[in-house]
Image (cartoon, rainbow, N blue to C red; front, side, top):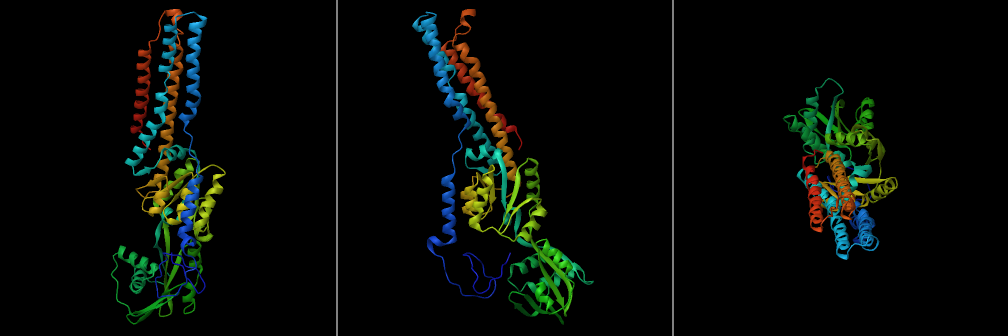
Length: 452
């Protein structure tokens, strides 16, 4: 939304001046620019992120030494205690090592992650690494940027109210006809609304822009003034109860004055995305806290949050402070940040999982661990569900791999030999070990049938 500037105010690079011209002085250059500071914040946040220790690695760290110990123990018992031949004892030890080879254990995690990331890609959810997929199911909170993520990111006409007896379409026609001569973003949103309603616009003569206040001109013989409520008050009197109500909802109000009489008002706002409302509800159902972070004032932020259903709002936050707000939440648990702009990049890097909207900036997509190519916030929920399915599959694979080893090792160690005379050959042990790996892969492939 447009922001008025006066002498002495700061303007940020890439800001668009929509009317007239002004002189400015560059006070920050090179390493002191906002962009340079954002790049440094991203690098610092990425450098501090600790790699996630894989579950399989933790198990293997204990499993492998234990198996080697069992093989040595089995050899020692059969050779020294039971007085079997060296060849017999060696076969026992080799069989234990072969059947316990943790191939299935090693395949359990990477195969599941490969299938999980593949399924995500099919749905337009690009997951850059297994770490993000493993972490997503553990989230304590999801932090959404407001503009362009939870909202459309562009102003739209939300209300047209007649203050007298003029029909709404006539109000829109007159206002859009005069505003088509203005290059102000709010004016463009009004003209767009008229186009959507297929309203034919008329020519306005003696058009004049009043910077910071509004526009005026003649519609036939009628003098039309369209502008801010504060400006219109100086020309014509009206009841502003309705206007205050709209402003409390975080909307910008434009008043139509015809021959010094107020005929109607239009409300303009950055409206919520429909998928955002559904996404917030789904996340809250899964006991994940949802935060909205924005640089907007608290009144506007709370009004938008109420429409979307967000209970936790962090407003009036500068771009460089977004990462700090995420860091505070990380003290309570795993945090995901969802954003689309350059200003969101430091927070995306700081979060345990950075989720970038595909229609956003290249910097945001480069920084995020997950990129939502369909530009739908509902895919945040899908990514978390995919993570849960993947982790569940990893745990299944781990269980069956360990169960198989727990069952096979005693047999390979010769536990049944005194009772049945049956001894497990290293060749059969090798085949059984290979079969366990195949079973893990087949179990993982069943993920393809899952819906998330």
